[in-house]
Image 1 (cartoon, chains in turn yellow, orange):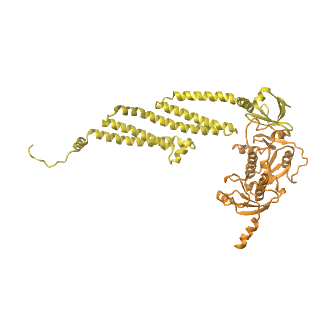
Image 2: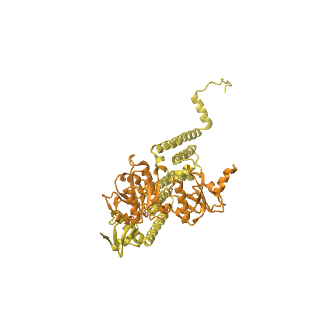
Image 3: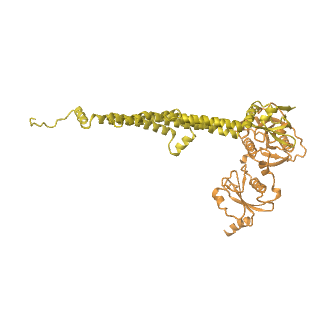
Length: 270
Length: 269
């Protein structure tokens, strides 16, 4: 304290930084830096995911699935949703990183729980979306596969395949976030068992005819135009499908279940 | 202007029904509270009209189109012989642009409606075969005109009244008319002689069939060749319908019960 006041000299840059650090605190700088880097990273990662998905041809592959169409209705797309999810996830990680840098440690256990569950939640959402998209795609593929088969019965197979994939995706997603899924699995088992027992009883004849019809369609021991005898029915084959054979005699047309063809055998008249 | 609307008044005075051919929704609504029955004739019932006659083919020949509609309406007991009806129909392009007054008579039953609606084979199958024949007639095989003979329905009896000319390419296959690949296959096989046999449900049973009907009492126009004669004759012997594409004049003709029912030019479709 000499009373001498020097004219304010030009201070070197590192001194300014030191001053600012002193002023706002080292922690705050760290928080801002983490947030800044995190934001850029999140945005870049989202864009990278988008590029990658487009690059591997995902938009073409999922064209026409229900999820994609719903996304289109909201003027977005599956790829965009996935890239935004990535961004939000990274953003969340950034915020927690920033918080820990800032030393905010009130309710520590709560935040630990959230941090622990966040990646799992993220994976669960991804699994769900992938499940829905794959389920839709499976439905389309199965439907396409069966288009040549002109049977109304096969229409149930595509949706059955779809919901199976949905259910599996939901199971994986739920178990990912730690929800007890044992009950669901037991439920599924019981449901399937009930369905099988019920259909085995109710559709016994149809199933028997269908099994016999499959063989008849593939090997065609008789064909349209042949005169055949099934049991006490005799006539010309007009049509046959998976379940029945239509036989026409002079003035009567018989519809014979294919199971009967197997039970009694079939005679071909030369 | 007075004289002009009088022409229309004459046309539509005292009609017993109004036939709308492929109307738009708003066009149909305008006639909602008419006191005579309004019949809609269209490929699809988009206006949810009642009564409705389904048009399996957009007949370019307006006479055929009207005949089909009248026959369909007679079949559904909406009109009967002696009724006068006004037909609002599009001659140029799709939209209705003209009014035709027609008197319904019993001899208008030419069988066009019957051919589609009451054949043994499914109406959709007959329509699909028509489409294949029209497409073949238009494009031909590699630019050359081809002929083809399709026997639709009652396949069991047709097979018993015919014999194979060669191995059947459709043996043990499950191919149906209307499947996308089939047009190409039929086009290729149409180079070969003989008839295609198609079952009631549209399954292609055989190609290369030599038909052996008895040609007694077959009533087909003179000048048509062996293909038409064979096709026409088999429809007398069985309940089948024959759809023939002529190689020489390129027309598609349909036979049923030994009679020629319909003749259309593929170029119009």
